Amino acid sequence: MSKAQRSVFCKVVRNENKELILVDSNGVEFLVPQLNEGGSSLYKRAVAAANNPTKYCFKVRVSGNLTEGSIEFGRVPGEKFNGAEPVGNFNKPNGGLEQYQMKSIPTPTEVVAAPLEDDFLKFIHNEAKDLKPQMLFMNELKWKYLIRNIIRGKNIMMTGPAGCGKTMAAKAAANSIEGYTMEIFNLGSTQDPRATLIGNTQFDTKKGTVFSPSPFVQAIQTPNTVIVLDEITRAHPEAHNILMSVLDAGQRYLRLDEASDSPVVKVAEGVSFIASANIGNEYTATRQLDRAIVDRFQIIEMDTLTKDEETNLLQMMYPSINISSIQSVAEITSMTRSEVKKETPQLTNALSTRTAVEIGSLLYDGFTLEDAAEITIYPLFDDAGGAQSERTYIRQFVQKFVGSTEKEDLFNVEADTLDNPF
Ligand SMILES: Nc1ncnc2c1ncn2[C@@H]1O[C@H](COP(=O)(O)OP(=O)(O)OP(=O)(O)O)[C@@H](O)[C@H]1O
Ligand SMILES: [Mg+2]
Image (cartoon, rainbow, N blue to C red; front, side, top):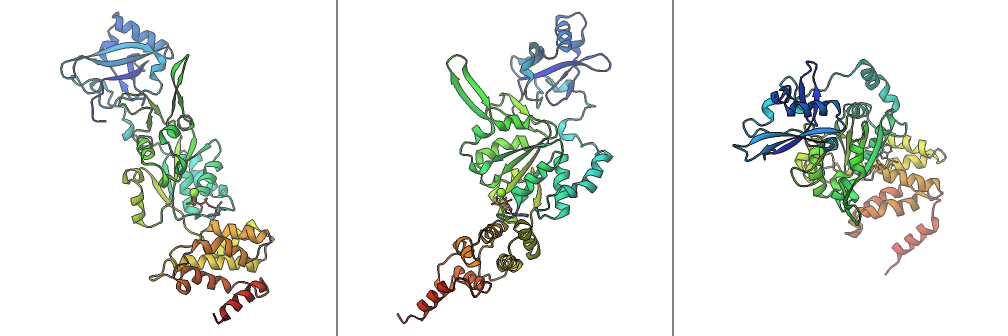
């Protein structure tokens, strides 16, 4: 906000010394001597506004030019204050409105969050772990950190490879804290970020141009809402621009229009944002996202499941599948995960927990491991290079686990083909 503000809307209130003061949309207070000159018409208007804050607010504006002009105070309808921009750099002419700022009130960027009450501390450290759904495999400390960040109204970014539980963890955390509601916005699928995040302007023959705010605008104004920004890495760059001020701890507002004096909507108390970013755990991947966006988040890196964790998960999800099949699935997925980390890997991508769950569901529905692999695993690996291909490599690995009685016919056909002298 480099351009000097020319106008701003404030509420008029009385402080404990009964002085009339102006308060901007960030709660910052300004003690303006003229307002308190008893008997003046300005004083009378200010008293009326202080007595009836829903009906009236004040517009403070620069009259004339910025160097030699003066500041004027006008009483305007109370609703003008809704979504108004806070005082930013209203420092002209002659110190502008800023000169009246009551310095004892810290500006929002300097506000240090109050210490959490004992109840909250107990909640985070003792109770939060029990809120984690049994089906979600996630490091306990990271889960606790996630819950703490929601309560602190922080922005959280879940990172990690595809299908490792980022979205699942975000939803589970948002759902598990009493008194909080959750709203999900899939940024990956938005073609028109402005319509999704701000709203639409329509023309109505009777009412003229009507602005209908988006569900996102409603959500950020609802206290204690956890807003899941899913797939932020796939969002249109315009979405990142719009979110910049919303996510900034010192700003926390959404501007409803591109013009610098257009109305803004403030992010309500207790609103937190959880973004999921489909980026690898390696540093370089953050290049896919604007550094400025990444800096506005606390990062929580989701780990991929170990072989034992994945076995447990599949057992819980599909108790009727025999354990050896489940172990085979976990063996296959975990092999791919360690293979990609090798110096000269035979595979360039690893199987996700999502894929493991999908294989589990096929086994549950009576498909053989061979069939399930055919459908879910092989298409994910390149078949270029024939016998040297990634697909051949994974196929050979899977074969080790395929029961000898399974699909005998198919094997015979393959064996015949191999033996075929042509
Ligand atoms: N850590 C996990 N614990 C339990 N289940 C998991 C975990 N990770 C993945 N799954 C299973 O895989 C599915 C997909 O997970 P999820 O959608 O959360 O992945 P994601 O990390 O958000 O993936 P993407 O990057 O593709 O968005 C879940 O519905 C769940 O069944
Ligand atoms: Mg996801």
